[in-house]
Length: 224
Image (cartoon, rainbow, N blue to C red):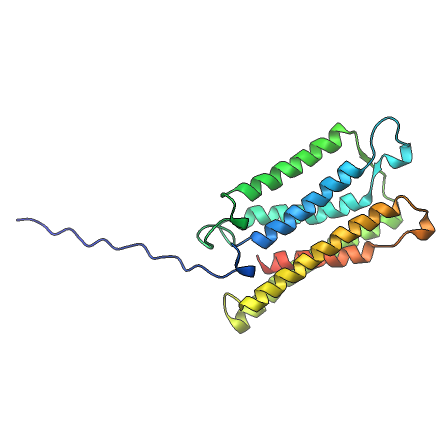
């Protein structure tokens, strides 16, 4: 007497959500992280080095330190987000449609390469004076507060509009963060110009940098 094999039950198809701009999950975060990493490389390569450079010009700008605060937050978030808010089980593809793990590899390799470059060029930092500590603390405080504010905002939005939030809201968040990234590029350029002019002609950018960095941190928090 033959036995009838049990019916094969197909695995449930995961429900794929719509993400900002209709791109794969993590794409906007990848662009932001690559942008900040690119700015760090730009500052490091633009910075003069060598035996003929004046001693006062050998010190790396404090802007490089303050950008590191944002970069570290991005690296930690991006690596811990995989399997939670980034991944094939959440989206149709990996961030930016690249092969799986590509963004993580680029970020890790790029950041390690930056450290090697600074070490190889014997770049050093001027010891911050008490007047320079506040800008660094301001960026740190604003970025952390904005990150947690983004998490709270995301929870409120999901409670009101459901999960996932409406597409226009997601796209607006992405556009605000990208405009903040553009503002960060302008701030870096102004900061590098400030190093070439006398103090009375320099444009203070500490508060502006804290604001745009906070907007980027806000987006990362909202996507946590």
